[in-house]
Image (cartoon, rainbow, N blue to C red; front, side, top):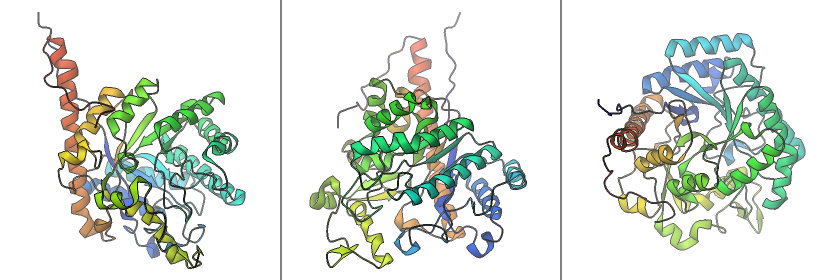
Length: 414
């Protein structure tokens, strides 16, 4: 009798964040007919070969507290919630989902939900509740966003802010049967101060600390992470070691979604500024104080752009030495490490391409389409290769007593 275990790789669904092209539907068309933007993005995603979209929500430019001139990119409000998202709107979007075959993985609203101004914080919380209600109407199981940071307090004090102010959001998610997935970007250029870490859910040790607070309040199952390796590279970390840390600490279940976005470290920039990034002379301060010109405030992002540049998967050169030095993402090992170290259903965990490579941030559908198409195809094939390797090395060969060759990349070692 044969002891063969079937070769049965598990591939992840591949998606794209709709902020990859904010102006797919021109504002003069989407403002009066907001759900047109979602319909057109679902159709575009189907053309790109994506299985899912991560639907980007944001306060409309007329309602936000950050001037447009101070932003790196146009406001990505593919989901427009100036008017309530009701059952009629949900039926229209659901029809487009059915027609295109492209699912909505989650709804993403990336904002500072611990803003030090309590009135602004409340506005952002109210908007997140609207996002959650939209997710329920669309049958989507999760929302995605940041935690944020109260800039008037230390990180230690922000744990208290999280307990007081963020736990109610997790309770709201629980009441609606949703997960809240935290993306770990430290958001170093979010403001003109010297804080590099402006989103307190930025590293595994903090994820665990926040999850423990959530558990004490009965909402631990709602708190999950939407992992993005670009932020790990920015902070000198590597994916395998981070996943190993979660496993060692008993939290391999925390990651429930992934962004596929890389980071290419600028060695010269690191030599000048270190991993803390550019701290002075950026252009967001004028005459010893924060500039009153909103256009100058975008220069705060030099704290990050001076030492690194975002990568759209597949567009950066294959650089094994950079992988070993944690200076860019080793995508194959990234996908292998996830399967080897995390606890997740990889057949449903979304793998979302997020596009922030500056030179290719093109607001022209025809020009951007082949770029995104290629990146999505690259991501799919890398994931399929990792799934094949995992099935062979962890299922098929062990069942027949065949050893796996070599050593491979090791956690905590670079």
